[in-house]
Amino acid sequence: MKRLCDLILILIAIPFWIPLFILCGLCVWISLGRPIFFRQSRSGANGKPFTILKFRTMKDLRDESGQLLPDRERMSPFGKTLRALSLDEIPELLNVISGHMSLVGPRPLPTIYLERYNPNQRRRLECLPGITGWAQVNGRNLLTWEQRFKHDVWYVDNRSAWLDLKIIWMTIITVLKREGISAEGEATMTEFMGSGDPTQGPQSTPASPHCQDPIQKSEP
Image 1 (cartoon, rainbow, N blue to C red):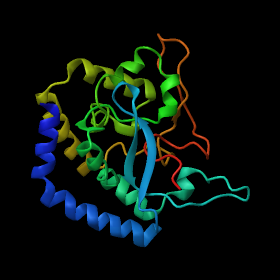
Image 2: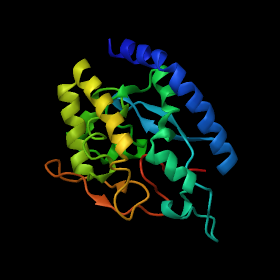
Image 3: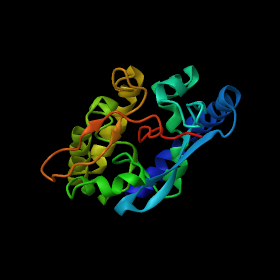
């Protein structure tokens, strides 16, 4: 039923998201060039990997040794606007159509995080990842990793059609208010480094210039 509802909502919204998809794609091409899409391997349901699609928001700027510069130095003004309005997420609708994602669920994180989860944190993988989720409407990127994972596991235990509709509505409000786009002083979310003790939450540490946040990491 959840899969069917996702497809029905996407079908109903075609007059809205298809023109935005084309317009944003053209703007990314003009402002940042090719490739238009950012691709990265993410963990889906039960940890199965898939390739997530997003619109690029960062420039390919590197230092003298060829390493990518920090996120805040590569983020373009146009990219900031895309992220503020969450328009960079539109291509993920193709991931939903292909069955790798749902409209609502825990955000899909890089596959390299799999070995860093403790047993409780891994429970976020018990359902399909989503374009938006309970953590995204309760703080978004202002949350610590511990808080995000607690929200994700809470969603897994309490998911329902009613809750999904509530989250979709709250997401619209959050986007319009531009809340929780990024933590103060950060262009993207810091890297999750894992938690050795299952009773403790994950730790947030500053991301290196070569390992960006789970939403916009290592763009080409």
